[in-house]
Structure formats: structure tokens, C-alpha cells
Image 1: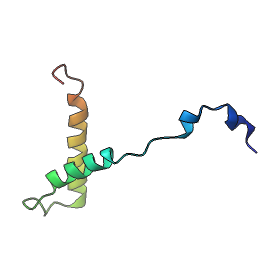
Image 2: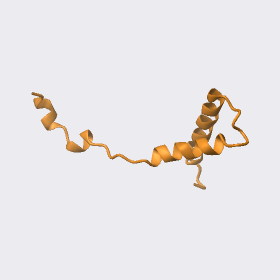
Image 3: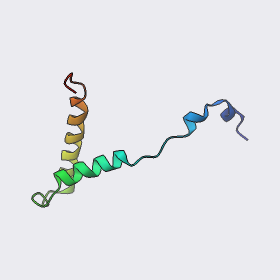
Length: 65
């Protein structure tokens, strides 16, 4: 039915399933939105999680990492 697909490597069609990214996100969320800060709005919480994630990515570019 799809003869062109037979020429694609099988590795391109299969991606491993892991929970590590989801666990990392929930860990950051629970760190930011805890009992002391449970009055944060959803938008502010998401903004803080994005800042936290971006700072982690930027810190990987440093030599100390």
C-alpha cells in the first residue's frame, strides 16, 4: 500500500517511551506550586515552569556543567 515506507529505516519509525521528561516536569511543577505558593494562577505557574526549564537548558551550555 505504501511502497516508499519500505525504504525508511525502522529506527525512524520507532521512538522509545520514557517517563523521565514527564517526571522532570512534575517535579518542577511541585517545586514551584507548593503549599506556600498555592495561590498562584495557572498562567503564572506555567510561566514560572517555563522560566525554570529554560534556565536549566541555559545552564547546560556553561563549562561548569
